[in-house]
Structure formats: structure tokens, C-alpha cells
Length: 375
Image (cartoon, rainbow, N blue to C red; front, top):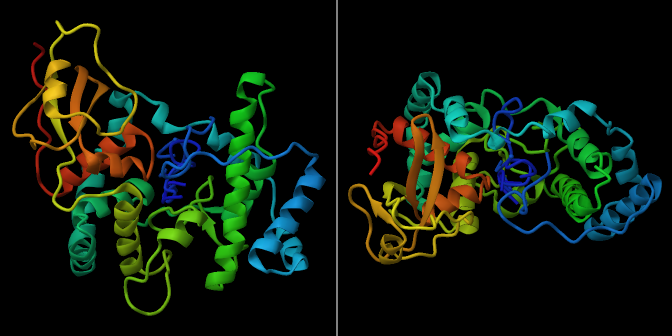
């Protein structure tokens, strides 16, 4: 989670879950998780202000001083841990291949497979009681929690093999720059984001007792079953099993409750709310209204004037936003609501959110409405 998610994500996954950000081998899901990061970090927080430009050794020394001051850790301890970190070219290469850049017709088949659907059903049956507990507490359906884990780590089967310390160290200090002045500010902010996540990794280690040099995760530094970035782990992880610890590596109770907590606290998930409905777009309404923003801010009446009609029942009086997806049979139009937006806070890609939604529906045995005939 996110980047602040699990997965909120550089790629839509590195800077996005805030958790939430993705152990599936690249280019599978990087939240979040998404070669340059989106405008928001895991989850949707704006990237932090750019850091002053300085040589590597000076920047590293500044990081040690700042982290020691913020965490209370001995600078020598921070230095000793950083001495174990390695720059990995494989991490830089992986960050350049985000699956979220694929069109929907190519992205969907990665996750909407019989194996992943059937695996989700088996997983949900195996963990029925724990998932029900999280759903009752937070209002996030068990199939949504399950789908997140299915997309992020194939139901815990692939939580990532990169040392988290190496991933964050590489991206904080060694991610290459293009030299394009138009991209400099964004590249500065990306660097600041990952240095902040590296700081949060040290803070997490102090708070939990984890040996951070031994933690494994995604190429963007996301960890555990739900792929939380360190900042999201610190902010949104909860103790679901009552043992006094927040363990997103080995406690499925903690994992389920933490993902649900992230959806509510970070995304504003509404208990019982609709995620998305199919829509028709009237081609005679010109110019086409196809917003890039994911925020649900339009009334159904406004959408009708802009050419959008829901296919089937749709909630009245609930703000929404229309989104276009380039499907196999042509453009697909959906009207999406607050709970769809909440999924995008885990990974800011609309493709990611739709894959999670459709996987959840399939796991629950609800058919995905077919694409309506063009008008």
C-alpha cells in the first residue's frame, strides 16, 4: 500500500498504496501500486517538495543526519544499515515497465484469469472468518480485500524478492535522470518521495523491531501481502488479531484489517456503496466529455446532460465520474463512484482499480455486465 498505500506509486504502484505497491513481477501491477511516477504518491498524496541538489555523498550524509534527528536513532546505526544497501540496476529497469501504461484491452487479461478468479474463491473460503471480521469492522467487502491481495501478490504467493532496503536506497539516490529540464522538477520530487520512504523504513524498524535489512518486497519498496509502502505501513497498518503487533508479513488478520482501514481512512470507502456501473455515451453530444480526473464530483443529472446514461440501476444523488476504457470491442464507458475512487487511492491507475473491481465481482460470482451495443 499505494506507495502512503499499500500501494497509492511511481508507477501506479510505486507511488501509490501508499500501500500499496506490488510484488507481482514487472510489469504486472506497479500501488498502490504504475517510468516516471504519477503526480501522486502511493495513495494520492502529492509528491513532496524537491530536495536541494547535491552530490551523492553529501546527500547521503544529509539523509543520515535528518533520519537520526527525526527518529532518535544513532547516526552510526543508520550508517551501518545503509552500508548493507546495494544499488540494483534490476530495480531501475523494473521501474521503467509499468503495466498500468498498457491499454485496458491488454491490462485486463493480466488479472482477469480463471486461475486468479478460482484462486480468489479458494482464498476467500480459507479465510472466511478473518475476512468477515474485517468487513464487519470497516465495511469493505471481503471480495474487495481478496482481490487486492490477488492483484498485488497472487494471494500471498509472491510478496516480492527484492530487499526493501536496496529498492528504496536505489530509487532514493540512484534513479537516473533524463536531463530534460521540463522533467527536472518531477524527477526531483520522485527522489524526495523515495528518500522519505527510506526514512519511514528506518522509523518502521525502530517502531516494530524489524531488521529492515532483511525485509523483502517489491522493486518499489512495498511490503507484505498487501504491498504497503513504509509510510503507509506506519500510518494505516492495524492490529487485527489483538496480539499487540501490526504484522503485514505473517498475520492475515492484520493484513485484512489494514487493507480495509486503508480504504476507509485514505480512500473514504463508503459502506454498502456502489463501485461502478456500465454507461452509454451519446456521440451526438460534442465535444466528448471524458475527464482525466478520477474524483467523483458530478451528479447523475449532470452526466446525462454530458451524454452519459447508466446501463441498469444506478444510485441517485450520489456523486460520480464517467471514465473511458479502451476495450477489445471498442471504447467502454463506466460511471464510477466514491468506492472506485477509494481503490485508486491504493494505486492511482484507473486500470488497476477496474481490474480489482472486476476481479472482486468475479470472485463473488457476480457476472461483469457486457459492453452495451453502441448507440
